[in-house]
Length: 159
Image (cartoon, rainbow, N blue to C red; front, side, top):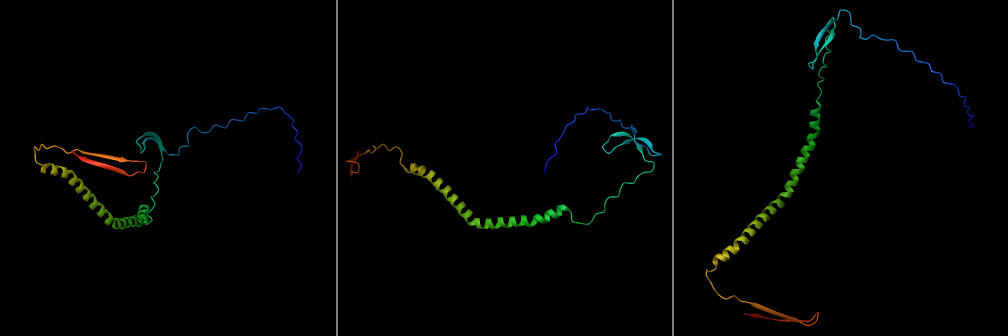
């Protein structure tokens, strides 16, 4: 589809002021028979306010519908999940119990072994006679081998 050529014809801009809006009332209309009084608001602030000539009754609160509260629905939906998790944990513990008992027994055996290992040198030292002044035995060993894979021969001397 062919486009028509655009021709620009400059024209001088003319400023036209917009009319100001008509001034409105500074205060809202006060109903007939209303009084202006000092009023204390629920948050404790005291202010001037006009009171309605006839008291306005507050809107009645909605009647309870008799439905189930939201927290009860949430608890009812979570109960099977929590119960299932507790049941799964119980099954897992029942499968793990024999291994846990075996590990506990192994740890007690290790403690007994360490205690016996620590007490054995004390018992051996207590069994030796005191004041023994004998000579000590020196053992000397000479090992010789020929070649990288040669047979090794050696001698042991007790002195």
